[in-house]
Length: 193
Image (cartoon, rainbow, N blue to C red):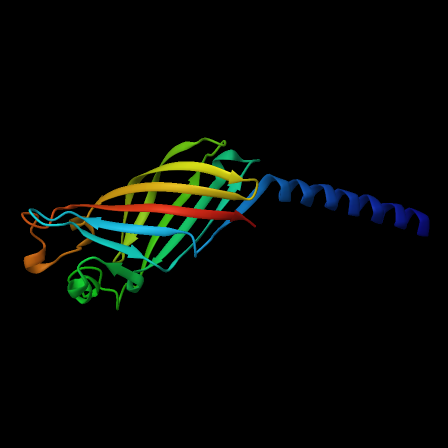
């Protein structure tokens, strides 16, 4: 009875080992390097230099599922108050309820939901972009550069309508001077976890 029990335990342990090894190999998690990565925000202005900002506090991770290819996912957050911008005297206006309303909505969220990835060098995804509590689906173009076995660089470009997110209310809602098309560009570095 003890020998049968021991053999059964060994078989169960082997099954568990192979099952969990399979799961571990099937997914890879990549974590954002916050020191190397950058997110740039740009808003065109008629007859003037565009408003440009760089966000210095970003978080994120990517999970690639090689088993169920269409189950890969990524999520990134950007802290609004971490913006450094070229028009420094307008920083408080940009953080106010007229634009980002940072006090009430301190984070921008980019969520891919599920996507398929097969080691492509270029990828276009429809992502959920959440700004000021409003979520819209927007296209995101990516260039993926493998820098090593455990390091990847992802350059991204995302265009969206600022008025769809109420970025600019009252006299700032007009698109005559402050254009509607806003842009986010990313230069992200991720390490395999």
